[in-house]
Length: 260
Picture 1 (cartoon, one colour):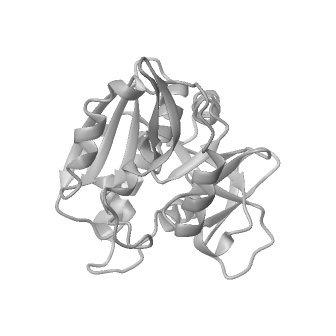
Picture 2 (picture 1 turned 90 degrees about the vertical axis):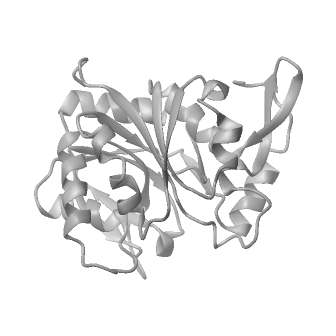
């Protein structure tokens, strides 16, 4: 990465958590496990895990694109001190898709290296972003995907890599597949930011289910330099579904001192 090019985190949080049903708070604030504070253990919320991993990857400034109804999120996270990042919010009245949500930040991130993460996905390893940032810097790739093994392919995007680490194919929510890895996080440069911007601008009005995976697939098809980093021992939980939320709560139930 060019040292003059800023590295920024970007978090889409304009969804309404419909898969979970009625909630007492925004899903980004669902308590999952504990963190250590100067006063002892305290609940750790879902979105904190992502901020923690962005920070471990060298990200110091983060933009969160937030639905205007989620006033509890900035009230809790403030300006990011809880995760030792500088956190700013873009409040929007609504969004038809994740690509549209991300594109709302275009004027703020267009000249930057962007680290994308989803606040309802808790993943390991902690240093995953550092690996992606390193690959992007070494190769100059327009987009680097973080790839995790999964069997839940019907609700995600599966990726095929070539022997040189370049992405050969992206399957968006396939009915069946022989591929093993889906992508969960990403780091990209200005060329992909512009590509995403144009994809959103040219999308048919009212198009439903406009997926970020479809934009990634188009980037590969149109010749952008897209690479992947596999995490064979990696794992994740998408806490936006009841079953995965229950599993994450069980897995993080132990009070264990860690990053505050």
